[in-house]
Image 1: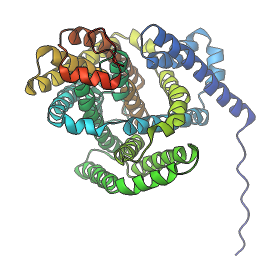
Image 2: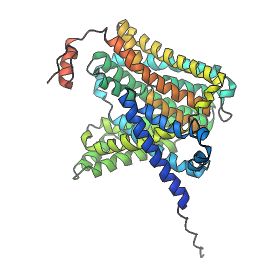
Image 3: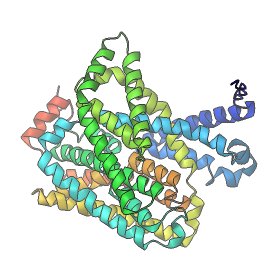
Image 4: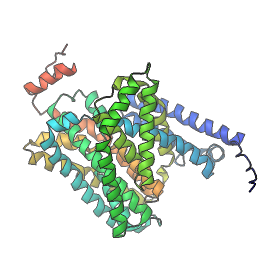
Amino acid sequence: MVTMPTAPIPPIPAHQLLLFLLQVGGLLLLAFVLGRLARRVGLPPLVGELCAGVLVGPSVLLHVAPAVSEWLLPRDPGQQYMLDAVGQFGVLLLIALTGVHMDFGLVRRRGGDALRISVAGIAVPLAAGVGLGLALPGSLVPDTADRPTFALFMGVAMGVSAIPVIARTLMDMKLLHRNVGQLILCAVMVDDIVGWMLLSVVAAMATTGVGAGDVVLPIVWLTVVLLGAGLARRPVAALLRAAQRSPGNGTLVTVVVLMTLLAAAATHAMGLEAVFGAFVAGIVISRSDALDRERIAPLQTMVAAVLAPVFFATAGLRMDLTALADPVVLLTGLGVLAVAVVGKFAGAYLGARLSRLNHWEGLALGAGMNARGVIEVIIAMVGLRLGVLGPEMYTIIVLVAIATSLMAPPILRTAMSRIEHTAEERLRAQAFGVDDGSGSRAV
């Protein structure tokens, strides 16, 4: 039987390629400039990078210069998919690197207290978020989402924390060596792991329904992934050692990226979230104890300086701040922010008191764990892509991510000023090479 040759797939049209290059280049430039400006005035770079997308998106450019907006960002799904693909690639690597830098030795050392704090710190806001999702006006629930799935998704969004934001905040404030700082990191590590698991289950429910069988299957796949991650530890360690024997850093970077993409593809094929697979890949790499983290510095630089800013700028593109002119949306946003803050503070404070920590230590833990930043933005993007969130709720959740991240430093500063240094903290300060709190810097 003779088969006729198929016509070759045509290349990207010249105009479409031009727009793609201008979109990526323009967003990166704006994200870089505004990120640097945000850092200079004491804000997280994430705020500036999101603002880059807000300026170019429907909040500003579409109203100021509609013709330019329609030309630069046409409502063409194919054009938008190209830009989204760059952002998705960046966020997968960002989440994997977050997993790579988790210190499980720290969790083992402070396991009991961290577990109590993290369980309360995610359970209370999770329950509050589910209740909020059931109570919100029906006009803010997309037609593509059923109410139970929407409520569960809101619970996950309220329950998560963001270890990249918290770690950077503690580092900038010279609090990493403090006992409370260490506990915050431990508790948030556990929160992040639980949060990604819950997100994967809720995302699977959003695509398959909420029947009993549809809920069980994602949990089964989740169990398979976790068991596979445990079995993969030694083979991954052997592969990393082999890659590190190659000259230069190229082989190791390639192996880490391949592991991330394959793990993300595997969980995506199971109906779970691709970002969960990337996170698991990072954890497996971290727990193998075979990775020389300094040798993946080129990958970290590329992700932090290029891919992540483009992703956050594309996230800002989907924010429509004009929706806040609607009193219902504005009041809902204030209510969501209040539930997010009170729920996380109450949960962390309860866990701290159960661990026999004092009032100010509980407040410091609440402030640190309340910062949602990067993780909340990623979850909001997942919700928008799945149709669980509409544009209004997406904008609200991203604004909650920004607001809670901005709240952390001043509350931490106030609470930590009332917590005495211990001898253990002073020794840790010497090991970290930071100011020990008495005005002398360790050598």
